[in-house]
Image (cartoon, rainbow, N blue to C red; front, side):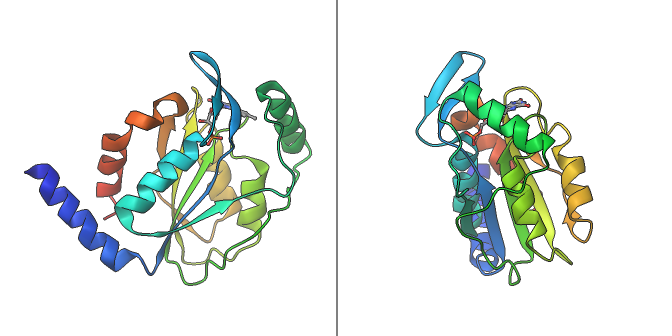
Length: 187
Ligand SMILES: Cc1cc2nc3c(=O)[nH]c(=O)nc-3n(C[C@H](O)[C@H](O)[C@H](O)COP(=O)(O)O)c2cc1C
């Protein structure tokens, strides 16, 4: 019964939220590390969460994709990502989205070296965040957000950055309840 009421609330929220709420995320397919060893992901972990948030809120959704592909090999990718972090690189995006009409933005990324991937910084710096409410989410294998929330707040001081949702990457397929609970705060 509780579940039915909650689903109804979310459906109503979806109707009213669809015009001004956006889910933006970066996620990488290919080899990734989990506590069970290296796995090959056809759909990235953060993408799984982003799509569930979109479904439950009725928001628009946009995937950040880099022009340059990262290596599918996990270890090679970690090397590339470290280099970008150290160089404060701003990798080019294939496409961008006009965020001006959105009040609330769910922003998701995989934890890379304890923070967000540098392509998320590319996106942040391309927009005016004045008056926006940002609800962050991340997937990781132990670090949680790391310094990601702190880095995000420093990067977009004009936005209100809310409490975030962090989910272990290898548990995304069973995270439905956790996501629903999290969304209750904002719908
Ligand atoms: C380049 C790279 C760096 C990573 N760094 C961390 C890290 O610092 N801490 C952590 O807990 N997990 C780290 N991970 C694991 C990912 O955060 C985790 O597997 C995540 O769920 C991947 O999401 P995605 O499939 O959406 O890309 C790293 C993975 C990669 C590929």
